[in-house]
Length: 622
Image 1 (cartoon, rainbow, N blue to C red):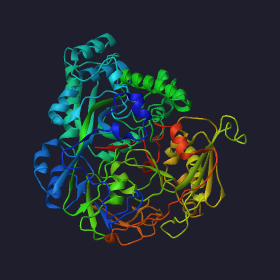
Image 2: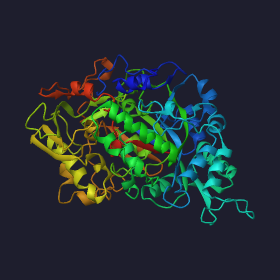
Image 3: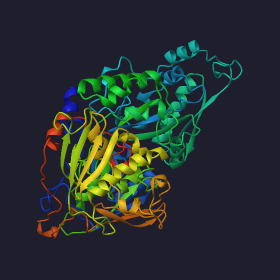
Image 4: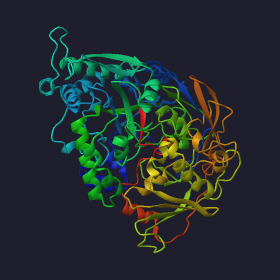
């Protein structure tokens, strides 16, 4: 593992930043009998996502062969049993994310930063590691996950790892949170009594409930009236998205990229009342002052300075308390299928495993049952940010580029890309950045309509124009000044600024079909959040991924089936060992080519995108 974070952030291959643990024999990435081209697939007939809320039931289903693997990680208490089963292997890695307690920074008295800091000092992260996660975790403070090269965890001047109630109580005493002699609980500085409710998912009593209880215990050490409350995961996430009422909520984030430009949005004051943004309702002028430097700098040093300062401000003000960064363990069966792909963002249950998994005996086809612990909240790519929806949606939608298993850009629809500024092409206005992207010519939507550059240009126009109606997809496109298609298979995107992050601001968004969204009976700009595909059979659900959605029983299972019209679908019988794919190309161009651009934006190519399946900054889990 690289220890110099500057070296890690500049590394194009990020495997070194991720801690893989050899609990069992290494996962086979691609079997010799199948195409080594990462894009080519799928090789199975169907993936069936089964909703199994109880972890013990998921473990039993895995042991019985009723599921091939679980989309979630399992509690370490199950490790001995699973490790002893010869038909089950275990994948383990340091999580690219964490469990945390989000705090409502809007409502009194939680809007007092000293109160939140006192809570952080009293909270016992070591106890979470020992009692809740059996040592398969590490204490962590920075809002940026430890494997991310921008993380300043090792440079923080102090930590909240152990319970320090004396420090917390001193802070509250100074702030005027006096203890009521009758109740024994503190009143707010204005003399009013208050209590704090720490909510958690009712379907995760051990990890979520246990962590929430440690939070309540910390508040009790501070003489604060507090209690836990079990709640429905989708309900309280919806409440957070709409800036509704809450005190503290426990859930987990999985980050999907190695970037940090999401710091400019997730905690920005102007988004404190914007739907789907800033769920902490955090407002801080000092934090906002670093935003432009983070977003519009063009050098690593400038971005790093801003990212470090913003992490330090969040560390001091605690809008969100990281409770743990755990070891992520997933069990998977090894007796029928192979080809599981290790993925820095999705582990072994992500899109690349679904694309490359195949039967051990070489016979094509088969059905892969996978457990998800919550039912999807929506199949609208603009409104959902649920990990359980993403598990399905990631297999249905095309993008210009996808994140490869090591989080570097991997071409999907894009065949060639050229980057131009005024210095490389005088026709580009000073200060602008222009991207010229050629797309493959054999891709079709699931209704048979060809995918063209018109769809690409329309995607960004749609996201930008629906922004005033609240679409969060517009968040990374505020500097977009043009999106058009001069030819059927060439799109041009132009930004009115230069930035370390511009490639990532567009490259990973899901491409949408212009003829569906732009027709008279289509969705339209204002209808971005009312579109209800899958759950409403009358709504259009046209996409172009390696799978298509074919069946569901709401709350029970969701089935996707291999798409034979997928532009990288294997063209020969995989049993012959000669599976191949289509849709590849080399392309030509002038200016800064994609490979050269990687050298310029190395470390920044994993920037966040607000559409979930196009690389949303995070996925939420119970």
